[in-house]
Image (cartoon, rainbow, N blue to C red; front, side, top):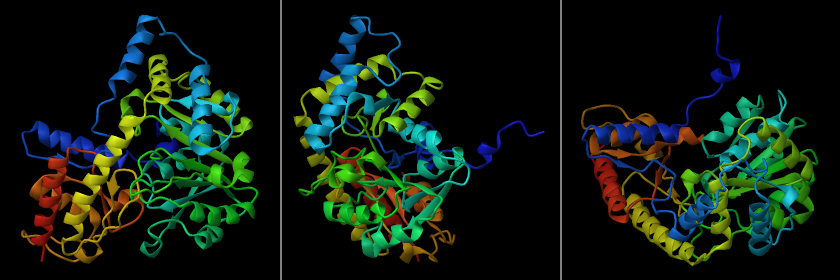
Length: 400
């Protein structure tokens, strides 16, 4: 008898967390390893946000809250959407969860039946397909081309839609590429979505605040308000406010969907941590000036790393408009050999070579559904980042 459920045979552990764990293991063994695998800001949570949690603790705000989140936080989220995105929601259209990851998971679990299809543009965040599989849906992977900056084209979306399609997952700025959809590009996708009334959209905006070079962020419900009742807009405090460990994400969308997600959350985690909710409230309502400073640092890091990588023979990388990732193509390196005469036949081989030879941990593109590429995170100390990219360049120049 097989004790584990059939769902477990359909999914795998998160590749990005596995890379980070491997890098930490080698470091613990005394090896000189620079980890570029984690999608986590290296900045600390701002002091005023931490102080908000301390004050909440002193006031005894340590009890259960409403499953959907405390009302002041949901109202702050409503205010955020109005202020920053010009989208009108009410608190009963908002649910708070233990990270944006839980919001996405609950939305899929609450809506998918066996055989329902979910369109996922590749490259994608590693967890999307596995979440769909756990919910017994079918991921429909659309591989995006470099000619379209690794973004979903309207004609590709139209071709992927079938009568079984239930969701499109749209992530902008994108993890792993950092590429973002312009208002014009979103309008073109919206024109296709309008023709498929059975299609809903999960808009993952978690990197919304991290955009560069004057790029103006837009989200689908803002660009196409007539589609708002078919869109779940997902965001959180993890990336913008360096609060990954606090585990607060949120979603806003049609009431029927929010109600179903709240029911599901009530039977799983109950509410998100009370103190984390209080800290998130302070984050959304407090000073925002520090974000611009962080974005400037990210932008400078991007430029340093991008130059080193694009100056390396065999690598080619698009210039991201946001997030804190680079996703260089390594197709020209396939078929080459290491100094030890080992064949590089995949991006996994290349990632293994970089870790073993120069102690740099990157995530192979296969984890994101599009090869041969690899992802680096530049949410790390600038000097370390430059050192790591120089090591990558040196190691690749030794291939023959």
